[in-house]
Length: 100
Image (cartoon, rainbow, N blue to C red):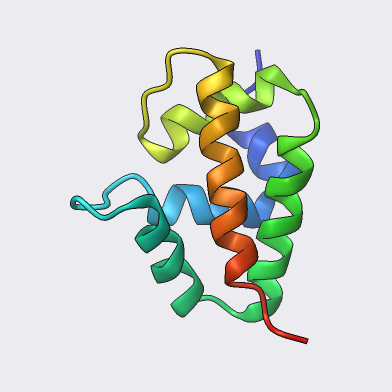
C-alpha cells in the first residue's frame, strides 16, 4: 500500500502544495488555490512542485495517484478523475512558473 510518507518522500514539493493549500479551501477554485500557493512560495519551489506534478501525471503510478484525493481533501471516483484533476493542477502550476 502506498502511503503519505512515501508520497512525501518521492514528491516533496508537490506534497507540500497539496497538503498545505488544498484541504481547507473555503470555496476557492482550484486555480485560485494554486495562485495562493504561488504567491506565498519561492519561485524555485514552484518549479520543483510543477516538475513533480508533471512527473506524477505521466508516471501511470496508480498507487501514488490514490494518495492525492485524501491528501488534498478531494473525492475522485476513479483514477481517470484524478488524472484529469492533476492535469489541471499541472497547467495552473505551469502558469505560475517564473518567466525566463
